[in-house]
Image 1: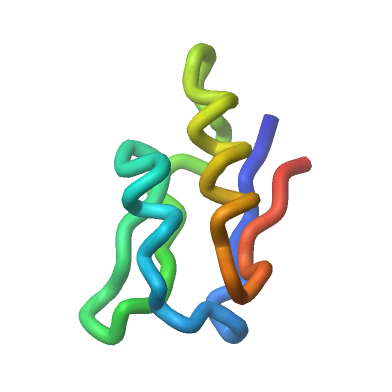
Image 2: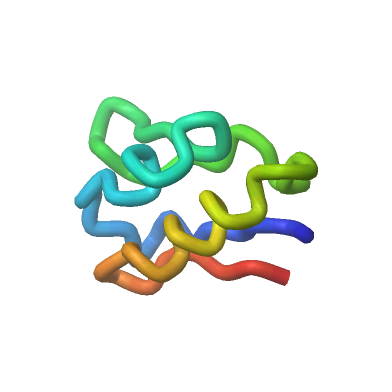
Length: 62
């Protein structure tokens, strides 16, 4: 499972970091940064939660 971000639409809410801190971070402007594009085994639920909690729909799983 891969996670993808579209930083151009990120509004910096930080929900992704709260849901999956091992997968996401924010830069100095608050924009999402993907730390691990390939979701490690056992972190699929956190990745799904991060995608669902993103108010800007800047994240996707593939």
